[in-house]
Length: 355
Ligand SMILES: NC(=O)c1ccc[n+]([C@@H]2O[C@H](COP(=O)([O-])OP(=O)(O)OC[C@H]3O[C@@H](n4cnc5c(N)ncnc54)[C@H](O)[C@@H]3O)[C@@H](O)[C@H]2O)c1
Image (tube, rainbow, N blue to C red; front, top):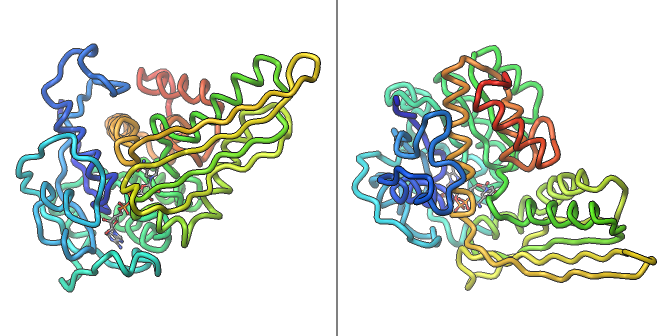
């Protein structure tokens, strides 16, 4: 297969897990050996077909380094599960804009290097797909990088909760430029949203009338701190809306507030509370905690989305990719029940669905 040429925007924890994952699965050829990965091959593409051509960040300890070193530099604090050799991929200085919120100013050191010409770098390095892994509060910066992707002729994957794939105007721009657009707000492999939705569907399918439910998180990555300051409300609204679609009736639902506990590092604890009535209107309660490491939870999903985006480019599909967005994101342009989103995605991969 041809290589899938990726430009990373933000070399944080999520980027680190993605790069480590590609190393981890590189030599594996049999499905049964690909533990933890949903698709070893997708539309013929293997994770080893993904190649990073450049990366942008603003952190002093990352800019100017090879990607293989920058990804393990502080304040990144996710788990190391794979050795990464020298990649010969430079981390270039991007425009800071609103990339560093008030709470992060104590932790993130801004590099004094000059900003690079992002569009030109993307063109020169022949990037095909730009992945936006900026902090969730970087609204303006996310849009600026999306514009650079457009100018350079790259597809755009928006892992942040900033509204881009879900915005009709951005959709039209990517469609006019013959480029795919995917997003918004990546949904983890075994994250709180997918688990919460699955639990509610299971209980509701089995006749339970759910009256109240909440799902709250605590984490210790820089993203959790940024969320606390800048995107708590947005994320809560998106997650709550996503969870609400699971139940065929109205219930009191709160999903997705995050708090910050520094010593957790990149670990995340997700708490679930569900209350309802079952046979004979007898009450039932579920009280549960899920413990994960945040960044690797995005890895398998990102590998699927990258390959789906490349498949769209191969087929010259442009504008919002509805199937990949509904399958892998919490706030896609068209929100679908989980099972329908899975089916649409598989149909898209096997060329039975256009987008
Ligand atoms: N499981 C997951 O990790 C997961 C799941 C869903 C969504 N997401 C989203 O992915 C994004 C990244 O998450 P993360 O945990 O890697 O965050 P992070 O804070 O670890 O990384 C963000 C990176 O962006 C860099 N940055 C800040 N401003 C910049 C700018 N203007 N230009 C270039 N780089 C800049 C930071 O220096 C840092 O390296 C977040 O928006 C998050 O909501 C992550």
